Length: 123
Picture (cartoon, rainbow, N blue to C red):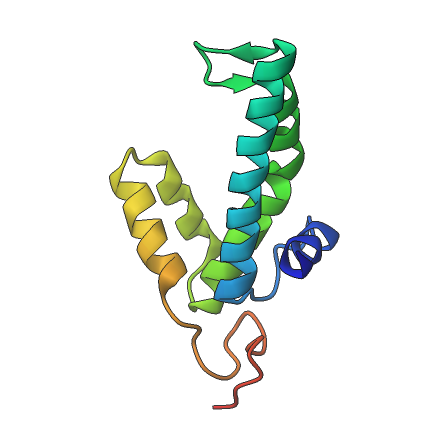
């Protein structure tokens, strides 16, 4: 939960680096939250079968979209890549696969052009 709150507090921070744990725990919590909110949407009748989401879960996703993009870009910075690589998400299927490979890679040790390692490693 601390990782999730850390990302939300730095919701427009596109500079710096984010560890794997920060990115993946934020992603996990979002997944679980959307599942729970979709269940609530189904219970109260605001779920749309065509869209696959409900009103409450859609509002939540819109609220965490900017922090999600920011942490993804900081994660790319941690692997010593520009945030522009995130635009690969626009390429169907292949782009998402490539980004997942980038996101699971270990941090580049020491300081890179995006700042010091969040792990505290030195070169």
